[in-house]
Length: 277
Image (tube, rainbow, N blue to C red; front, side, top):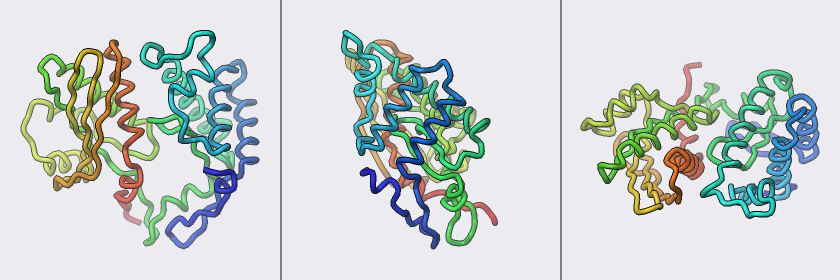
């Protein structure tokens, strides 16, 4: 994303042009956020400032855990995401801090800065554009898509608890993504030990999208093979993700973040459900 592209008009698909904030607008918003929400939190603000400036410079795609860790937390010894979770922990704190700011002192700010769950690249938009972007051609507001996350299947009997933990972390992270809705754990975990069809799952979850996959481990490598399917069994997206690590909780969290980061958001948005006007 080049600087010129950040402020370029965008067609929302509803006959209106949406204007993204300029780099100057974004930097001014950063100063407001710093003054009202980050007093005494210099290190956390440094995280926000770094990712915003990298995005404005056109390097949003390079904002990975290792890059941020080396830049902000490397010190004398290089940051190693396999044994250090500082970036992931601070990213969660930063998302909570931004959410609290926009619910409080920043609730009327024209520019909104966010860091969606599953990645570290920030997003910028104008508050007055939010309602326009969510309106379909018929004038009905479009809700975020509902995602049903099936309990992941362990390919080894010893990995059942680990697979359940990955499922739980995906649901947890998806619940905090403003661009998604996710079916409740109480609904999804009833399928853990039962036979089912994707249509049955979608019916109970109220969703046309089902995320499911398998888990296996070979020594320190945890592998997830993931699919996003329609309720009729059509595979919309699939991927394979390897995470190296020994601590189950840390690996489960990293795996959930990687899955949501790679989830094709364009495909999800196309299936947003119109509300009744």
